[in-house]
Amino acid sequence: DAGVTQSPTHLIKTRGQQVTLRCSPKSGHDTVSWYQQALGQGPQFIFQYYEEEERQRGNFPDRFSGHQFPNYSSELNVNALLLGDSALYLCASSLFRLDRRMNTEAFFGQGTRLTVV
Amino acid sequence: LAKTTQPISMDSYEGQEVNITCSHNNIATNDYITWYQQFPSQGPRFIIQGYKTKVTNEVASLFIPADRKSSTLSLPRVSLSDTAVYYCLVERRGSGGGADGLTFGKGTHLIIQP
Image (cartoon, rainbow over all chains, first blue to last red; front, side, top):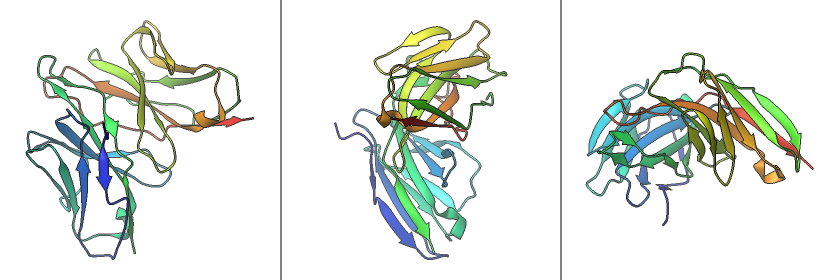
């Protein structure tokens, strides 16, 4: 089991550019969440996708958008990059248990280190 | 969700038992307590989760008193490789719409010395 895989591992972009980050969930998982982690801080929740729809969103501007594909993989898009968007972007996957109306524990990927210059 | 408070940092030595306490005074009935571990430049890793009393797995134990306003993560016989950041989280479960996005604080930086 490959676990949660993210690509690329590192990325350097220029202010104002757009970026797309990718995530493949752990086998058997159907829910993907994205987090932003600035240096020295805990991860901050961006949004969560389930059944190809955004189910919940944290306190992030519309410049941050996402998508989930039929195979449960996901993309995070950030437009008009700012210097402050430099961070480690983490993807986490889980399984939504319909019988219990709750998600199983979250498994995180290694993250994508985004640097905006 | 209930806000969590935990020490910013802790030091200990190899072979010792380490206890990290977290307070969550406003915890609700549907809330569970979850602990994650994170090494530098890696994603957090689930350690343990509990609702009340004591939970033990191969990695750690979690003690939750009856009022559930605090919890203690216990790491037995730590080694240098246990040096990491440990996050205490409150997760709302069974609300019907799946788990809420996880809310992380700054965590506890645990440093294990030889």
